[in-house]
Image (tube, rainbow, N blue to C red; front, side):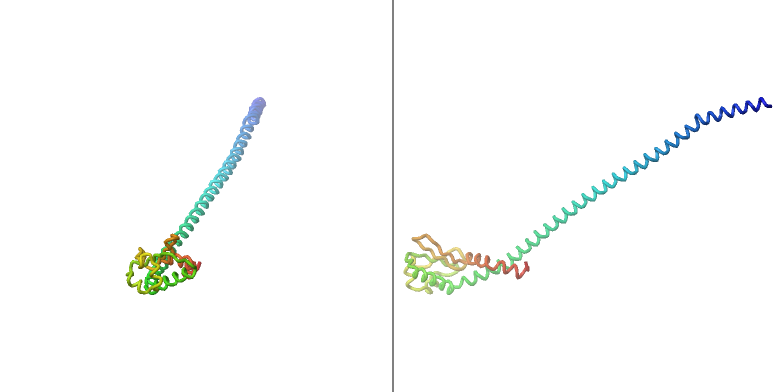
Amino acid sequence: MKGLDSGKNKIQKICDALRVETLEPAKQEAREIVENAHLQAAELIRDAKEKMQGLVSAADQEIDMKRKAFQSSLQLACRQGIELLKQKIEEEFFFKNLADFISKETADPKIIAHLVNSCLKLLQEKGIDEDLSVVIPQTITPRAMNSLLVKEFMDRLQEKSVVLGDFDGGVQIKLRDRKITIDISDRVVRELIANFIRRDFRDLVFQV
């Protein structure tokens, strides 16, 4: 029995030695592998989170840039649309009405005759004595206008009569020798008045 016990002890010792020499290192290695795997996994997760945050940040920046660009384009389009609307309002309500008003007022023969007589008197006072041509709107007959002009001025007209022009109101006085035209036609008057009162019109209508 003693010999059998001794054999068992030897086997036990051999098993213990094998366990210490093989199993324990294997367990330790397995633990290290698991720990390394955990560390690598944590690092991969951390890298993935950082990359994801970078992608999200880049996407946010791109979205913000596009949003700002869209807002700028929208604001520009709104400003252009408002300005176009203002221009249409000016054309329809301001310039058209102004043109109609000036054409109507400057087509009155008495008003035109007053302009002609005043201009010719002023030229006479300045010592300007030369042949003249007086051009009147095409809507008035020369005979009707001639009857309203001062006779002494009629004698200075090159054609001995006023002549018809291609405008609807006002008058043009041409100094033949000097080749100068004093233009008080409706088109010129309209432009002059429009330049003076356009700002007032905008202030009144658009409050700008």
